[in-house]
Amino acid sequence: GKNGYFVDTAVNYRSPHATTTLPENAVALKAMPDTCVTCHMDLVPATSTGRGTNHKFKIAAADVCSKCHGEGMMAVPRQAEVEELLESLAAKIEAGALATINKQTTLGQTQIKLKAYLFDANGAELGQTAEIAVDIAKIQSLEFTEPHGQQGFWVTFTQNLDFTTTTGTAVNTNKVEVQLGTFKDMSGAALFPPATDNIIKAGWNYFLVHGDGSKGAHNWPFVLAILDGAITAMNGRTP
Image 1 (cartoon, rainbow, N blue to C red):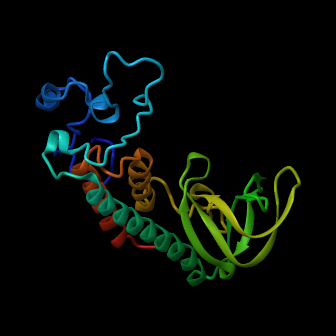
Image 2 (cartoon, rainbow, N blue to C red):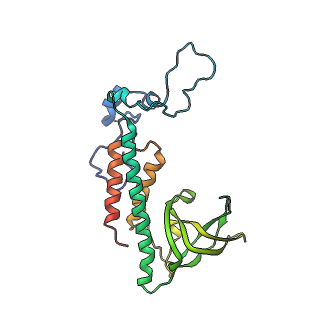
């Protein structure tokens, strides 16, 4: 509850589900000391023999939240809310990035630089290109993703283009994967400066929630705060 952007750091967003002995978590810890296993593992009779089914760490019961939060408390409706916020944030990040790229045309530029990951017809990665120039007019759309542990986009072009990896593999395709940090203008300046561009902070919040996998169940207040904050930041971002 302390590692997201666009959230009030004065508010204690530490999750009551977190196994920690910090003072602010004392009440929750007393109520549910074994927080992870309480929700993620089903108890089996001591007389059971052989392999059990309770070591997958995957929550099987849809009503597991009701054990502590009361009858009728279901995670699914709130998870759907988080999924909608994630979709909205991704769409705003994609639109914001495309607007930044297209803005180059108003500055008299017709191309941008990038490094692209290439794939074969079966989706197997073939390698990355050296820094290349692509026509802005041929960029059709962006899809937010996480290439090699960094923020980035699937870039779809209006037509198939010829690319070559640094090891010499030639690929003719209309879709490549590009890390955010490799997008540059023709002078070599970053299109998305990490120190100043909120698109990177918003992306951090997105993948923090997306990668957690609980769709907000681990810490509703914090997740909603950082997603709402990121969406607000993207709404106010200047390309």
